[in-house]
Length: 206
Image 1 (cartoon, helix red, strand yellow):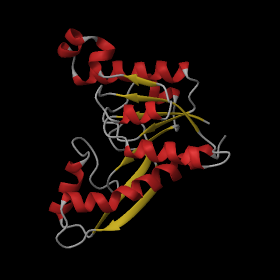
Image 2 (cartoon, rainbow, N blue to C red):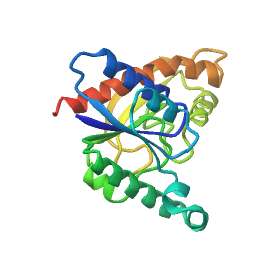
Image 3 (cartoon, helix red, strand yellow):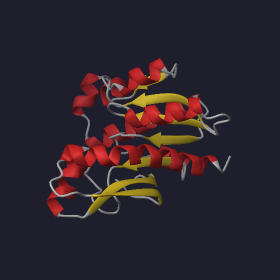
Image 4 (cartoon, rainbow, N blue to C red):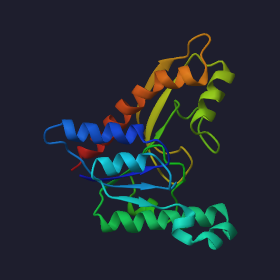
């Protein structure tokens, strides 16, 4: 199963996928390429160290600076999504993994890769999902709510924001006195486990 990983930041979950592939004999997936919507994402360095081809698909890279400045959010999403689709087709990708990817995919790619795009979210969906709910914003919202547990979710991406069928969830307790950092530190190892489990679930189809 050929995989593309979409990233926006540090790439710790990408690293987990790379490490699993290297450490596992007859690993059922192969990461063919890594795409980032931020040109300075450290995840790109992780990919290069793993000899994985990288692509920058930010609105500026895809549309040019002037067009990107003038474009609406939806226009940017479509253009970025179409570029991701083009690259995935070129690389004969079977499954797309969103590992800390911040652009909501839309348009043709959702139909072309129906049920073959997975997303990692740092909370127990359907709670704490949707617009604005990413990274530390999620953990801040969880702590402010008084919830007793949090965790992470791997789900099928369907063109909505944190919607789609849930594949894997991992829960952790919210401890008294938790901060964003301490809560994230408890969830982060579970993210890596969940992402690998979710990808292996799709790999079982191949």
